[in-house]
Length: 172
Image 1 (cartoon, rainbow, N blue to C red):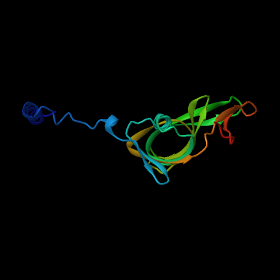
Image 2: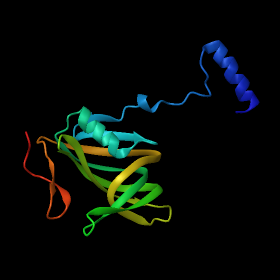
Image 3: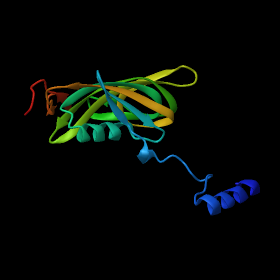
Image 4: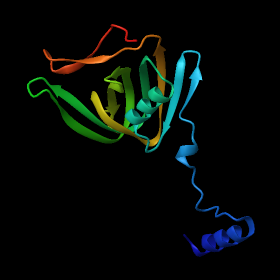
């Protein structure tokens, strides 16, 4: 901080009781979603963990099941499911634009289960995509539209394919 800013901050702090130059918006104070006629609209901010925010939303609002779409600026970790190893082969992408994200929210063994895929583009307009293993909001924001379903849906592990599958049988 320059000398002028330092002096100004000290004077302002003495007079008004707060330092104007150290004030930054508190992310905890920012509302993350609002109800709209089609479901919910979520706006995440820089540094937010996308999957964690979706999980928290589903728990807080007691969402039985949902579909979602999104776009924005992200750091993303994709995985490509390897059917031989039954694991995801991961790849990271930093500072990219989320051109498209789509997924479902369901439940599995009493916990929120999110299945999401997406496509990101870099500054050269190269596109990369896959199963979203993790992601955070980069510079800017991510906007997500959530369509809520009236039935609670579960995800179940199927041995024959070695993966979790969304069951269309509603749960109580």
